[in-house]
Image (cartoon, rainbow, N blue to C red; front, side, top):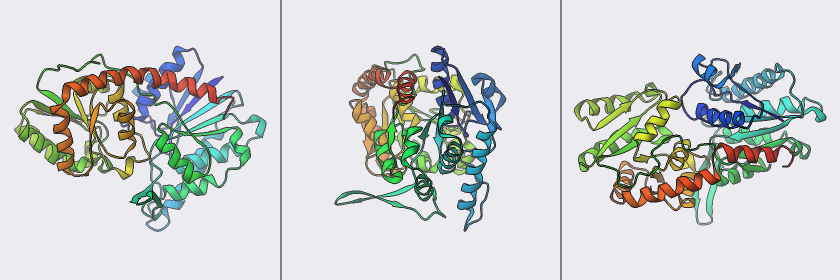
Length: 406
């Protein structure tokens, strides 16, 4: 068996794409399992060389190639889906002995994969694993009977409509070769409801990469960290207010704000720069994190705060929280999300906030700081259990079992 890793978003060190590829590639090569990695055609040369990857796909996972306000969402879907099918057809030699793993797909990538596979003779189709890396774009509301999921206006967010449309091209026969999956049981159940097709759950690939795996008794000041590719759905609009409050109210902390794409949140980043110039306890890092820098950021962090939007993460995992669990770092996360489910599973090495406001996040952060040593002990135990149930080894064990069984 040979595993072929496809990721149309694998272009640079921004976000989770490169780290996922790193974890999986190292595990495969350590097992002497042949593998090939195909990323975006514009992949940065250093990342290409590090992963021994092939720059290949013309259309980026999150790219917008038609911005017409009325029908751009639909033509963009068609262009990208057909483009991916064509790009796959340019790869020679793929057969039933291969497993294809598609990382972090969106609706156009799902449709492109299906079109490509269905155009092949049935006995020549490989096993294809498609992983959904984000939420499906449903609007979630609470009712007396539980959560209610509603598709959004496709001119605003077309994902749910296009996922359902794409899934209707599948038949019972496609269950022989196609495996759909997320990294979270809650997310899988939502996707399965939307697609009306089986959606499995894979172990998360994140694993310990820092040496500092026991933070009990950590010397003050503690470092409160905000890490990753900062965006509005990750609550970054609130971060300057949260940071200002924390620095004003606590003299036993410093704050680290990492943003791999500072130009994406210009106003907030400028505000943080001004604050950092006035207070040396605020440290900013504005670099996209390669493997070495990411490990260093985790090493520095005593508490990771995720002021994320609840609706966005009800059916989507957080790579940052996964890294925190693997590396024994307590967290602050929103209630009712996949992040909340994860910390509950691992004995709650963190605190939650119910209200998506700066006040709510600050209160949960202060509670974590006041109970820090106990949470750090729980985080240490969580990292041990994480290594037994998650990580690239467990992911590969599961994928290999899927080669022959649904």
